[in-house]
Length: 221
Ligand code: ADP
Image (cartoon, rainbow, N blue to C red):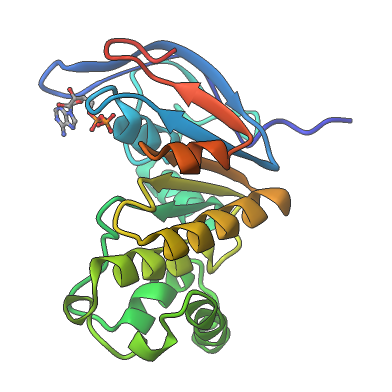
């Protein structure tokens, strides 16, 4: 028996409240164990698509299936629970909370999952070590570089070993060595069975992916 793919979109459509239609009749499937590069010019809808796939925005038409089940009828609370349990997110700007320490930023989502803080802190230290930012654990995000923030955001995304990872330009602020580390970590996560989707402009990142999905200006293809 083959299991349903973690994410699939069928004739998906999304527009912002101001009427800007960003995704139109878009169909694609993202299998487990694969890393997909989402490419396209600025404004083609990559970030928006990640928000929709990550249950942060609601599509208006078509279907979005999570492990084969439509998400359209789910309440906001159910969507939030699924986000906390199934997804890891790495945003373009790292999106760390400036009022909390790096360590607290990394373990924050564990609390939503009602996991023990002690175990989460131990896992977080292991990840911070692995990505060369362990010395920054007690710092605030305002005291670290953009590249460090990006690696810390990756630690946060990997903490729960999520089945789906959505990354928006995760290497944008990184030097080549850090970029390679991040890409290798995401690829390893895919090879261990996760579904990884990366919006990227970087051809080297795209090359490291197993699959490519290109979006053009008007309609996702
Ligand atoms: P990309 O990530 O490929 O640069 P985006 O998803 O950021 O593309 O943007 C796609 C389109 O949606 C653009 O035309 C952009 O101006 C528009 N857009 C993005 N965010 C919003 C928003 N919050 N409200 C209205 N329009 C938006």
